Image (cartoon, rainbow, N blue to C red; front, side):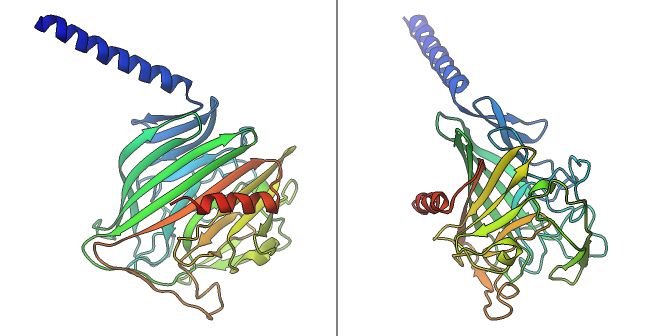
Length: 350
């Protein structure tokens, strides 16, 4: 009798595993963890969408999503520094894919950290991947939850990060929700007002604004980076905010969402980033530049407002704060009314 029960149990386990594998194989949105490659690849309808990569501080100083693709398979993110492409810019090596960090956390610069900091004074902080808590595909949505530590210059953790990514898409649209909770560990964590932040995408050359002159951009520590004029052939990017501000004038303005539109070859592309009403500082200031840095800075007010506003956000020891953002990538155009409706839907996400 005992042998029969054991056999039945084994059969039920095998059947359950088979059903789970069959379901996974038929999910429209699939996630595959490549532990050796330190990455999770996301596909929608069998086509690559994006990858969560965590190669470690010897390669990049934080985990990122890279690349991010349209429904037609076109990468919207820059290749440099991981996979450089001909004709693209090679400035700001810390701009990789899509990421979230900040320029002054208890005096540590997480934003500018890379393997080529030059004469930047630091001290630098590093974000290190720790674990994958959940990973699942689905018919309408895939989900990935990871943990990471924000380390100081001595590799001591000051913040524990838990981030959940939701991946979805159908037709010409692809969507990423990033919900990040930061918990202060043994001491209070101060996010000193700083223009270098917070959620960001570095886009490919074709989605930059056409540039007519070289420019120099200075970070919060005074380090200057030259961005030269380049051939503008095929460069067609254009920002438009929820408040109707356009072009490079969006920098330092508040808005509920931002839309970057342009063309890569014959494909019209729209990349929208949506802020969330529950975020600190909503509606966010935008740290979005014509040379391809596309960022929403929730916590940096002083530089953005020309000194009229200032926020030095304090997270007490043991407490947590959550930041929510949605990225909508469209093969085609995204009208204001469509993005307003998307923002209303996202506002209902808790």
